[in-house]
Structure formats: structure tokens, C-alpha cells
Length: 117
Image (cartoon, rainbow, N blue to C red; front, side):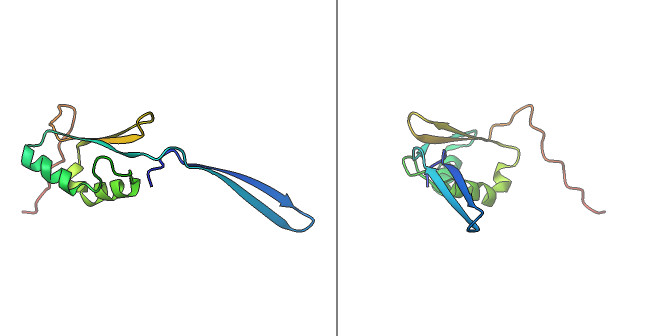
């Protein structure tokens, strides 16, 4: 977990005479990243605190991309039409997330649901 720059470099050797294939994989984990800043814009303080409490990682914990994506999927209705930005700081080894709930002029609201008469 936390290795967002993981690289696998395969090296394949084929031995036709013996009908063998050898596969060596060089694994470079890179730097392990931690959760950085979690920035929440456009919510009042109680709603902001609730979102922070439900977020699966706290600042300083090892970043887990699976947990982050699972959180977004499980709360998809909350984030529809909202800005979610993920950035990483290679020097500090952190991943920061920004959730923007402010209304934007360039965001189109979801179309109204038509009800049958």
C-alpha cells in the first residue's frame, strides 16, 4: 500500500530447445506515500467534520488507493457534479485530496426527474 509509482519490468527468455519460458520481473516499489491534506470546500463545519470522520484514511496514514476509490463509489451520490481533486507531492511523499462542494457557474445541475401524471 502507498506505492503509487510502482513499476514492474518484465524480462522474458525463451528456450525453444527445451520448450521453456523464463520470466523475471524487476519490481520497483518506488517511494511509499502517506495521506496528506484532506481539503473540503463549501460545507458547513458539522458536514465537513462528518465527511472527515467517514473518510477511510487520516492524515499521516499510508495511502491506499483502493480505500479511496471504494469511498468514492460508496458515496457516489454525494460527489455527483462536485469537484474531487487528487494530487501527490513526490518530495514529501504525500497524496492530498480536495473535495469542492461550492456551487460553480460552469457546473450543470442534474436534470429533474420526470414524474408520470
